Image (cartoon, rainbow, N blue to C red; front, side):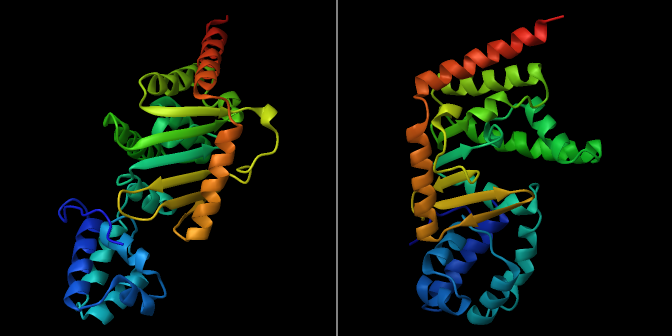
Length: 279
């Protein structure tokens, strides 16, 4: 399945994807045929061509061999390693830029796209308490740049389910939490995102195993992203993605309505603000 076509000058991924499509078609191979010797699906090849997936070095070596590319893919694959994001998240962040729809269940923290500067800074210091200021600032800059994705008034469509624990975990203190929750509420009030809160009273639910993030595209298969401590994985296996979609949908079904969720978020923001003002 062909993916969305990108401007080859826009990124190294787009360049490699355009060149891969050009050379594959020139060799008279279908996506499925090219995928077979790499032990990947035709849809995976399509994702490489569209830029929704990042080409790995071993794949680049095989591409050069099959397509007689004289080392082109290996040479340019190195450019893909230069990312402002942590290695385990870089591919997901790149796919996020192309997504038409992003759905996420967040069990512990406000999702990165929705974080304020102060909240994000507190998260990074918690993750890396001995890091230098320069390292934290670099991570912070990348996260705030990601948030610009929401500057478009309609795309991507973003729907988030926040566990109630996210609202109660005092990341950065009461002032930071008040600002952070008000920011989420503002995005919801402006109809830029849809947010729901999964209350503690919901008890056991389908997404308890952790973060679930789903990204869908106009002409490519849906991707699921999982994250654990210091590691993450982007998954396109249809059965796995379908299980993630079901987990997200069931969590959303158990959550408060968007209206009730917004009221709770704004109420807690006010509570945090009141605590901040206490002597």
